[in-house]
Image (cartoon, rainbow, N blue to C red; front, side, top):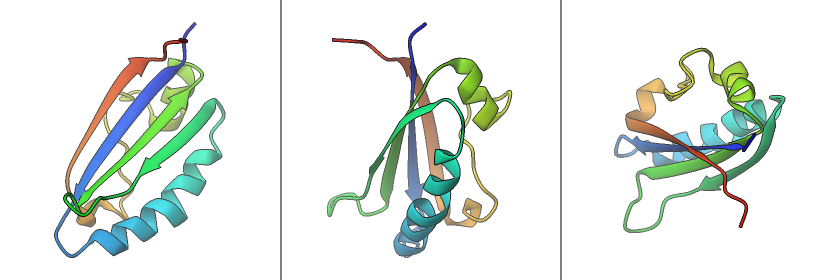
Amino acid sequence: MANIVRVFRAVVHPGKEEEFKSFFLNDAIPILRKHKGLVSVHVGLPREETPQEFMMTTVWSSVEALAEFSGENWREAVIDPREAHLLANTSVDHYYEATI
């Protein structure tokens, strides 16, 4: 079975960029890395033209492993209560990983 690629995007409220970046890198990523079935994680930090946009791509060994992390609603974003007030918008998409 193919790995599952999960692409999470977050847009933060103006003025909350540094607070979210700190939470994202120092809290969310270490928690995520503890989950069985996580193959890799890649973080995209804002560019000058899009200072409020963050992205994280994770690769999971299976849908079951992803669901262990995110729960039965694995197709939805997982939002920690400590970050909810920082977020203006989120989206999440899933893909099968292709070997090329």
